[in-house]
Image 1 (cartoon, helix red, strand yellow):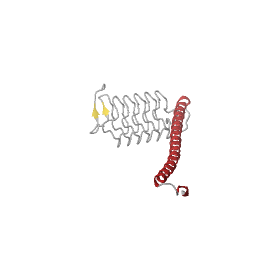
Image 2 (cartoon, rainbow, N blue to C red; image 1 turned 45 degrees about the vertical axis):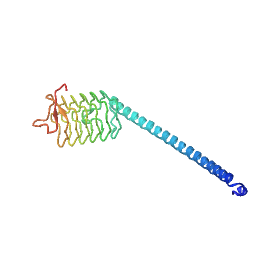
Image 3 (tube, rainbow, N blue to C red; image 1 turned 180 degrees about the vertical axis):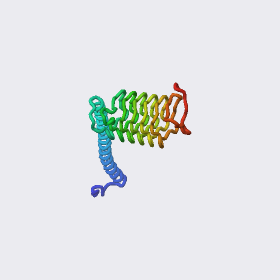
Length: 217
């Protein structure tokens, strides 16, 4: 292949071979760079489309919940994704003689704004309510068995007859909350804050690890 260099002086031959090798490597490098750039661009676009799809799905989930609230539709909202949703004052409470509210079991409500939401009789079994804001929410007869309410704000929430068996209320805010007749069997309360205005089931003593604070703390 390099027979044409046979008569060349050694110095020129070495220079020519070096130029050929360098040119070849340059071409390979350019091709690899183009392929890598194209792959990264494709990956970025894919991630963008996935994010858009996720946001669209969450928007549809929020709309479904709001429609349920507005006209009392009874289809299940189980496993719905409502992370960070603004659901202030939404009415997902029971609507008929069944006594059942919306089925939100296993749903993701992490960081959702549920201030003054009506969740009377709602099924929130194993729902994820981490850091959810449930200030003054109505949760009478709500089923929160196994729900994760870590860091949730339940200040002033009405939890009369709520089922909190096995629920996680670590570091939750329970100031002024009404828990009369609530089921607190195996409920995790370490780090939860309560005040003199917090109402507990008859005979219930807040366990070690809970924190008593003032109503304005």
